[in-house]
Amino acid sequence: MEHMNDQDWWRGAVIYQIYPRSYQDSDGDGVGDLPGIARRLPYIASLGVDAIWISPFFKSPMKDFGYDVSDYCDVDPMFGTLADFDKLIETAHGLGLKVMIDLVMSHSSDAHPWYQESQSSKDNDKSNWYVWADAKPDGTPPTNWLSIFGGSAWEWHPGRCQYFLHNFLTSQPDLNFHEPQVQDALLDVAKFWLDRGVNGFRLDTINFYVHDKELRDNPALPAEKRNPITAPAENPYTWQEHLYDKNRPENLAFLRRLRALMGRYNAAAVGEVGDDQYGLKILGEYTSGDDLMQMSYAFELLSLNVPTALYVKSVMDQMDRDAPDGWACWAYSNHDVPRHISRWNLSQDAVRAYLMLMMCLRGSACIYQGEELGLPEAEVAFEDLKDPYGIRFWPAFKGRDGCRTPMVWEKSNNTGGFSTGKPWLPVSPDHLNLVPELQEQDPAALLHTYREAIGLRRTYPTLAKGEIDQVAVQGDVLRFVRHHEDEEMLCIFNLGDQATTLPDEAVLGWDAITETFDTFGPWQVALFRRSLEEEA
Ligand code: BGC
Ligand code: MG
Image (cartoon, rainbow, N blue to C red; front, side, top):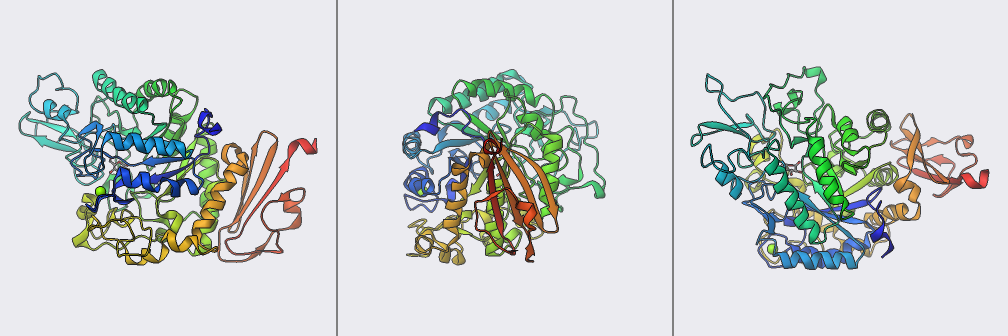
């Protein structure tokens, strides 16, 4: 397959995110698994995406549903075996799909043998593998750093008579990247999977790898400076400027080592960078040049902020300023935020316009399972909640279970064909009307629009790989130009409910790709192209 050898395959790629617990169960235990995913790969390939990203399937006590790893080099039995993974890769590659796996290297599970040894004494071989620190003289934690999942980021360990750092759950102790052996061990993990044939990684929380060695307190952020896009406003984590618990310059050195290893395999990575204040700036730092990450996952379109024309322009302007030669990976939905159709309360037309926008933006794109069906956020009752983050902040913030309910496939039973057993989270009854089985038969269904929109990036490499400029806004109308080699494309979006007109001169000299029109209707999208060569 030609594109399998393309070094630059990641640039402008469309990546389909799979949350393995909730994709397809193959053994009736109510939890999705690798053989289930393998069975559905032809469906995924039919969408025209370039790659899949599979959220963690490694051995884990599942306190954070796989983002707490107790063995980085094995598959959790609930998901299958290494042999199942090998089969999955082979099937995916046969269908022309790249496989990206989700490495959670900033922290491990407290059940990981590394942590078990580290916590056993102050002088064992791995005593320095996690972030241990003495209490202040008054017994309180060493710094004011907070855990995203609530409370102090420090947990007291009576055995060592010290605190350990955790940016997430107390059962997710933070690995100490100042310790060279830790970096080496994690690079070995990456190598293990590269040797098994993965094409790249989604790297969890890459700006959290290194903490400040001097353990300095984060400054407070005054209310008017807060910008809660990585956590809800009712989470005091958003009230600090995260200068010292994350975003440290030493991250770059580790990322360079990782990239050098990936380079030997022609692999690509998208590193998740979450920060309310400096997200795009860090994205620029981590993805510029060719010795760091290829792409960085951004939160700007994952927040509660509805991406109005002005908002999208402000994000593009910021990219231009802070990350001119960086590369973003955009997403509207994922396993951490309410599904965007509900989060932004979008009509069917609006969902389609935003899909087209994503396919036209400079950057790669992640689509989250079920988004192609237009699944709304599921209502999950408090009694059914599984996410510890939601349980802690309920009801001000309901956590992440509403976007993690099982994928639906057919109308045949009340699990939508997900499982023959009782699903780990309830299937949302209103999802059953949106199953692929029904949408395939309805030419007007959203699923077909996803296929067409994704297909545009194959048809017009300018949309996938080109530069962006001339970003302009008039009312709800956003327009910009993409250009690549000898081609330019003009992309115009009405991101509003009002019809408007496009003056003829605005599109003079351009060839329309989409239908032409007299009025520019609500949520209408218009694409044009022209060849620079023909003009010369
Ligand atoms: C993942 C979350 C996870 C956290 C801790 C992230 O940003 O996407 O699902 O809880 O990292 O690993
Ligand atoms: Mg199963």
